[in-house]
Image 1 (cartoon, rainbow, N blue to C red):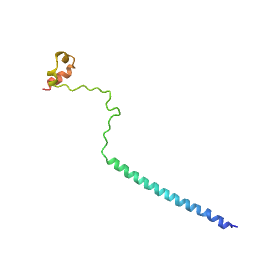
Image 2: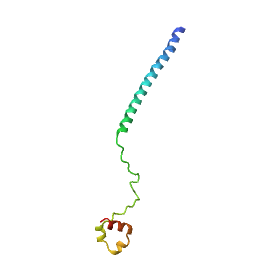
Image 3: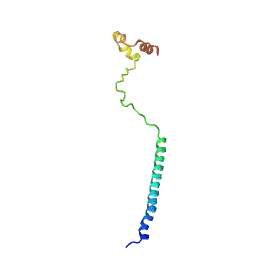
Image 4: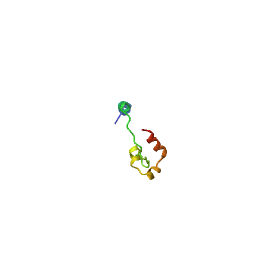
Length: 94
């Protein structure tokens, strides 16, 4: 038969075990916080990555640059279809 004193001993030990577990848990959390802080500093020190658009310029139509050499090879009909502001810009550039 157990006495009342023996029954109380496990109850008294339980808070000590819980405190030990909580301390270990808090220590682990503190270590993780320190690691995350170091990672943040390391990432902040890195140069920003060059980010491309998700569509990688799909659907953008960029006309080829007009040059004097290209104008010299064109027929009068091809030149007539060009943007005259662009033609003037190329010819005035020298």
